[in-house]
Amino acid sequence: MKLSLSVRIAESSSRKDISEMPLEELAPLARAAGFEALSMRASALSVEAAPVRMEEVRNLLDRQGLAVSMVTGNVALAANSSDAPSSLREITPHLDLAERLGAELVRVMLQTPADIPHAQRAADAAAERGMKLVQQTHWGTLCETIEQALDLVGKIDRPNFGINFEPANLLASGGDHGVDAITRLAPHLSNFYFQNVRLNPAGEHCFRTRRRGDVRLDYVPLDDRSGILAAPLIEALKQVGYGGWVTVHQPLRDSQSVKDAVAEAARVIGPLVRGQF
Image (cartoon, rainbow, N blue to C red):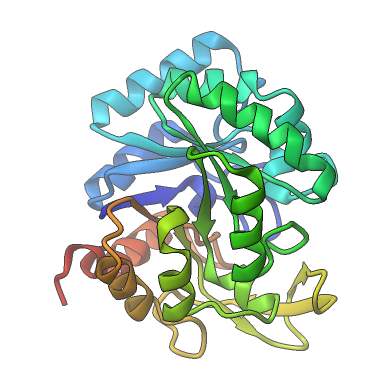
């Protein structure tokens, strides 16, 4: 497995369109902490960026020896807004961004069955470039549960369409989010995200699920045992032979600096991926 850091680490927990640290500072910080890649999001670089800026970012990452594990090309995808599936209807800019950054995985969002034929055509276009489309287990989509994820993969029926396993959203949606879920989804795992949350009826944040309605929760430190335990999940990934990216997708918590957040991510998740306990 390979260790990746989402640029979400420099976004506040309530904003997905603004980064608290430019890539010119975040990239060397991530590399120094032992990360092998960044998961790129629109807060740092979007499909609307000028080609010259995309080239600058690629050169920056190359100098740091960092890959790009996945691209999330616009804010709508990051926020799962009603406009998120529009990328399926115009996938070319997202594939262009991934190609410029040397990324294989392109994040998409399917919210209704009407999105499926567009996803099939987008997957075919991605296949021509040797890329994969990735749907995250996420509230408000066709992948709130493992059962839904398996059903969606079957309906898309494309070898380059896979699932990004993210347990916090599965927890909020009330479905299986543990070791058994990883085992069931193993043939279709294309990425793994980890952010730590604790359910709390009075929590600061709200995941608007379809299965359970609005679910409130708090973001907690990555090693907070009142939230989701990362170690059993990463061990399960090893057991099923997963060799892809393990990405820390934790947002910046209140009163936390980006530097401290990156250090926490490296300290907690790095040893689990490398098998250093």
